[in-house]
Length: 187
Image (cartoon, rainbow, N blue to C red; front, side, top):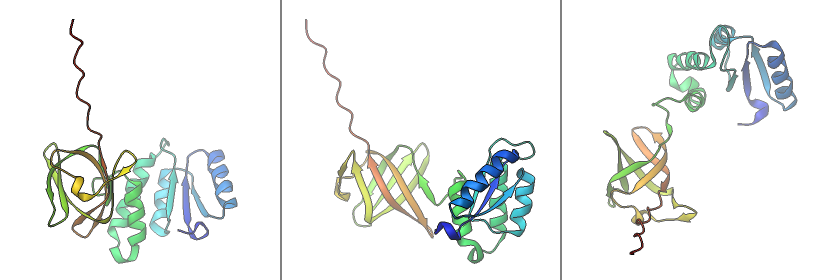
């Protein structure tokens, strides 16, 4: 996104902070609107499009997360083809299970399918299958690995994108194997 084309909304209930942020962002070339509190921000969101929302978390009328949730609801009401960029941005801003750009904590590989070039992972009772393509970066520490290195029961963290119904693995970080415990010296 070209910063000169980005339309920002800055939300804070402190007018001094609000004006300071506005001045700094204007000098950087952004188009900036301001809202003195959460309610005013939501009202502006009904009539205006914003690429990015910068909000204080603790405010008197509505907190920052309530503001972002309200913007998310506004986006969901519009037809997707009119607001795809806006929806993608808001999903990245909100920590939400439907976020298409997901970063996992540690999960275990349940199955590796070499034919379909996919892996199934499990965490607790949740199971997901990820497509692994030529662009997927597989690493252990600083070393790059091939798909063939992945094995059942390995502990990994994943970053992925959701494309339609498919989950495409962007990065797979393999946890370093734990060293076996050292034997106590015999006396």
